[in-house]
Image (cartoon, rainbow, N blue to C red; front, side, top):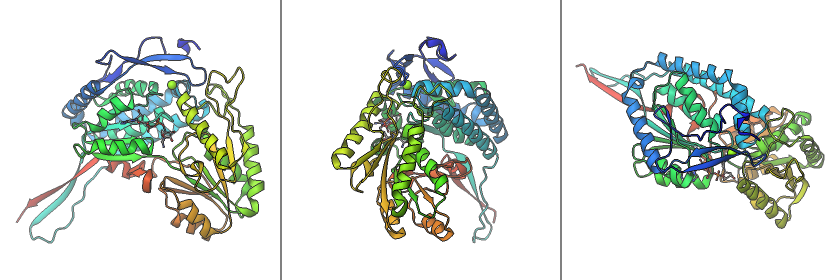
Length: 491
Ligand code: NAI
Ligand code: MG
């Protein structure tokens, strides 16, 4: 694939985006952005490390004291609306850039740009809805009010499974509240975050408000998490790295929010609308080649319908077309990297040796169209015991474990027996079952007769080991605000 296939990929090295400018790393080092479908080199990118993070944090701190700090909510709203318009006008180009960089099907990437545009417009509205309260005190003559202030310099560390989307999700509330941002994208997908930085400038965001510093986790990421000039850090990624982030953040006790994925149960009762539930179960597990934090990777099926339902999900999985994501007909692209492919095949091997049975997929695709990329077909395991690694750990590939269950009490107990709690799905036509499951499943989002539905106004986040804090909705804004209590003695 030539480097000219996308206007952003013009053969020039991509710099870090700091203080409104593209700059080389202080060390002069670079790393390569590769297309996981073909192995082709897309661009070389400046490799930021601690020195560059430091520069970016200083730029972000200074920006708080510059014109940005004096802007009104109406100004910030207009900037967010312009940014949304700019993204919307370039949907196709942005979708293609992510597809080339991390592999996912372009139709999915287009949908993500659309959702991000909607999210930015939501935060544009929220910029003007920030308000404190005037609690009535019981102290004679004492007036009290709460004032919301931007928390300050925000750091964000994001993964590769939705690079533009994750960048916009971190930037939206930052812009709405008047904070500033230093974002470290994933080393496997830094291109659209860099382009997002440039588009912010076009939208009228002052220099230094949004800074994008690509680099590796152990260097740039760790420096950002530990930086004493950062007031708040938002991390999305693995639970293992999440723990390191919390430790690094303890130095200055910065505020931390975490979105750490999961092992989400997807539960199908025999009374469900099975014609709707089967394709939903396949999409929940295999969309984005399974690289979704809230993927429905533990499928619990009531025993009476287990065999037929599994056969139908396997049939649907078999109709999904794998290939280079940039073609419209592609349903599933490759996984993001050789490392991720190894991780996924390692889990598949572990499932086989533990005695689970493969009923679909299981081996990497080969042949001319696939050999240079990391293509793994939808893989379905039955006969999975609850204590197998494939039943407990987040795989982040197109791998589904299926379990039969007999009663509602049993399935609630097994579904909740996980350290994670990001999402859960339930299919039933019985309204009392739906309510009971909605209450008793320990997860930040419970979807009944749907799965993975997202709306900018509805909070999303984890119970238990799936994280801290909420994204989307008013809660997401609050994460970026400090509450000041103002007392005035008017006696
Ligand atoms: P990761 O959690 O290590 O990487 C996510 C981000 O954290 C990247 O930007 C990375 O550079 C950064 N990072 C890594 N080590 C860091 C450190 N010590 N300090 C600060 N930042 C650091 O995930 P990775 O290695 O890409 O994928 C491994 C597994 O993690 C996947 O197979 C999947 O199970 C899980 N994962 C879950 C995600 C989710 O949204 N739930 C997203 C990405 C990965
Ligand atoms: Mg890449």
